[in-house]
Length: 87
Figure 1 (cartoon, rainbow, N blue to C red):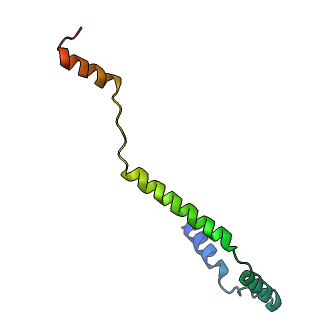
Figure 2 (figure 1 turned 45 degrees about the horizontal axis):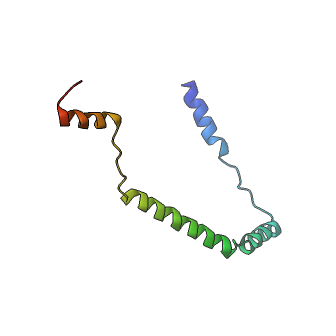
Figure 3 (figure 1 turned 180 degrees about the vertical axis):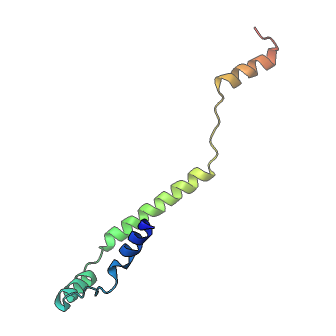
């Protein structure tokens, strides 16, 4: 009961608070700074090329069939099956 009372008290602690209002000049400066800062096109093209390379490598690896190498057990089993001798 005490824990529920504490939870309700915490949840209702922000009731009646007024939201912060930024200074108009500061807000205008921030908005102007956001609009003027652009990423150079060189970096955009570099990121696009990197993404294309990554996707093409992934597709190549997914669809390539790896050459299976025989393990030592498989090699030994192939020799035994030819001669049928265990020793």
